[in-house]
Length: 183
Image (cartoon, rainbow, N blue to C red; front, top):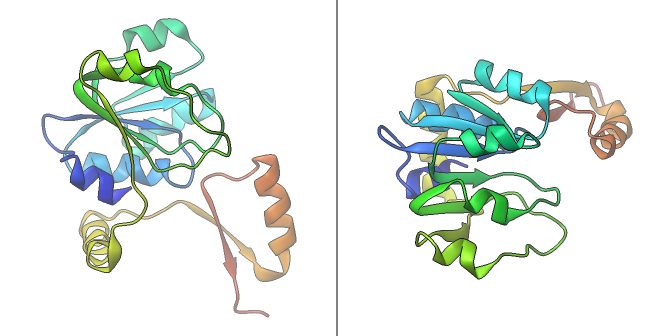
């Protein structure tokens, strides 16, 4: 998430939306905030909307609440970390003129986008994977300097199967780390 935030110049005067608060999204909130951006979290989960403030978000918008979506301030960039199926057109409406949605989550199903959602306001949809070795080193230094870490749950390696089952049920808060010391 560092690479697209850097590329799209997240920082003072920019309003960054983070769609989805999972393993990628919770770190995107922290990095965007450390870059000086105003951060708006877009989530379908009420408990994660509450957690967004702890992570550094300025606002949290519950995407299932149409009144909250309509009241959402216009965004310069949305970092879309959601890997589940979602209507990208709904979020295009939240962008300012020349705004961009950057996909970092990988939904299993193809996205369906209406041309009008992109053309109106000269908006763009793009993607970002990783930034390469130099940018990864830069990201690690940035996170070190700003005290940014991922929230993780550490499990012994013997519980790898349990971790996989919990992942499939969506029963994980952000990320698992398997402790390999006692193998």
